Image 1 (cartoon, rainbow, N blue to C red):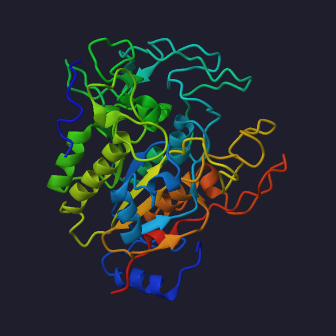
Image 2 (image 1 turned 180 degrees about the vertical axis):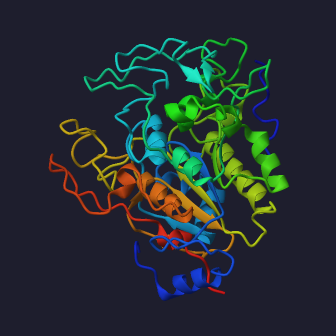
Length: 421
């Protein structure tokens, strides 16, 4: 595999108000699909997933750390009470696509088994063939006396829902490696460049823990798996030609997602972070989000009569928040195993923006939402009536351990509403 420059291409709730209903009716002639739970039909949804920041670290921070995202939040729609599901990263990505974190409590490789060993290569199937990528991230678990589970599974997931409904989709991961012999993407690679790659000045740019398509056996083993996993330039090309799939899930690499990569960073000051406050890392991430939004808004699909939505969200906060850190649906932690005490469960309050081409603007929505809420909303927007996992938790619940009441999982109606014409 050849290393390329990472900078080469950088360039409420269920009730709908009369105004929102009028906006939906205005597009009725163009979209005959039924409106589910007040969420209008969307032709395209693009999710941009950032990493590890509290709402106040990004939106309206003083001094400013992310002025582009702050302006997008002001101009378009911002969910001011949106939470991650848990910590760390991987279970949040899984939860958004499955409606459940599937018992995963760490960032270990997709090939890890319940006994803490890696799948044998001949049983680690990728696109119908044994995995040829090195399994260079050990299955160590979190070593905190908590249950360890397999990190690959077969069960309901959003990708499978889209396949069943005949809806096109792609994962787009910046800095995803490719096979030099075949040119195919290698999303199964745990990290790239690898932590032991002494030729790389910045390591761990791509991480499979930020690509949930690898965790679902039915998706990863399918012959079209590589075709569904593509890189940054493919995203820009698909936008330019108007061929973006209906669901596009874009994940920046760890220099551009506010996370930060591993390895020496002195040669790439854009990747440097230093805790709270403005930093080169946050500036790089903020600029990159604006670059992605600019490309989307210049695309033929955005300029068409089709309904297109951009969702900019984060997986979790930086684990530094205080007070209640979650909401909505099933308790995010196994019974008897509270995470950081009974009043601090969940993945933290995180920025989430919705930018639409034909929708309302200026909405500041304080309805409690989380990744299950977004999943439910996307199901509705694509006309999928079945809600998988905890996206179907439509009633409030009191966890057995006496922690905070889980509010219902409701669709993000106000955020996705169409403007009246």
